[in-house]
Length: 226
Image: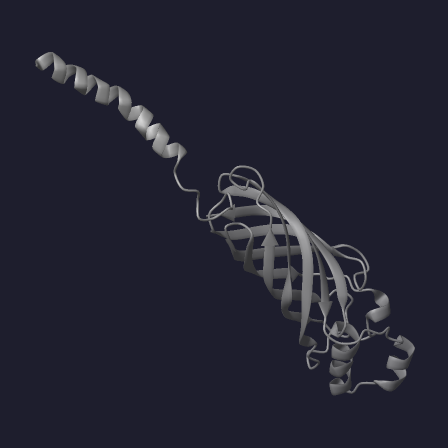
């Protein structure tokens, strides 16, 4: 009798791995077809503004914070800071310094394609509306003239993120456009017509410089996901 019990126990022990393997083989599929979990994203990067209204490449700093549903769709907030935006001289009134501070703040929708086993490689595209700020300095140093302007606009771009665990890198190429019509300033007309009227000069910066502005921006930096 003891031998029978012992043989039965051994049979159960031997059969357990096979039963477990069978259960794992027939386990129901994951409710989500995507290889990674939903996660938060943050990045900080260094880059340059160029083309269109930017005469020469200038330094730009960017930061992002967002969320991706299973790595495929989500949104992000993007802030960009250009402390010395080198404007095209054709768009600069004679009373405004050529390198104002231009910042942008964007609310973007984002679509990505998580590749490899845990989404280590993620090409993406994003875009959305936002607003731009310009802080200009009068060439004559007249503190009574306020060249600080704000306008709405939009951006669209694409890039790629690569991760080793939670830490990775992000490269981004993006187009920015400020609302309004863009046209070239005739500095000779401005010199004769605007004179020293401060209100007119402030309106000129808003209408002729920031309105309708467009440029490209490229950034590379560090990314984090969790």
